[in-house]
Figure 1: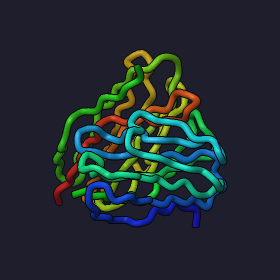
Figure 2: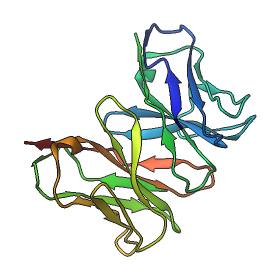
Figure 3: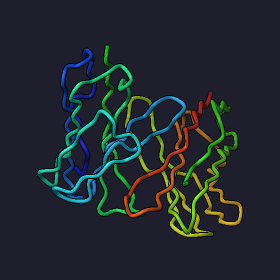
Figure 4: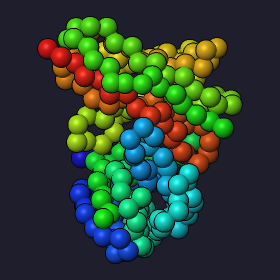
Length: 113
Length: 112
């Protein structure tokens, strides 16, 4: 089944404790992206990647890192999480950039205490 | 800059009622327009899309027409069901970065 998977689905952590949220897609998509969803704000892009070893900042990149060492994986790293990073995170992928449909993972609900 | 504005919710309807969720956008050129749906506890799923002016996207009884003259992409359904209860997001994609720009989402609750 073609899908985007994320792990973990739920995470509660404390301020400053490094964490990684994994994202993997099995559709051989070139493009991958991370979004965060906050009430009243919709979804906002954090980082994106157009191909292996190519990443760039979205609208809200502060406090996050990403890497794209393999085509299928695009982990999101929070080196020192803070409470304002409490949010619902979505990974997405698409065949290419521009106006392609993006396919979303199930989401990771993160709480930083 | 590019932006999307949706009508505020929540929208509460009775089963079989007509649904309209308004969406307007601001963008230069010709963006692609999307409606995504988020069912409780799930990720976003593409509901429909349109890639150029006057295109009509449709799926599962939902429709939306890309209106460049009014910069709108309103979502409609003739007869909603309880199973349509979800959050609906209007979005546009315009640049080569692939970024989707979302509206704030509209919660729809359909009562039996």
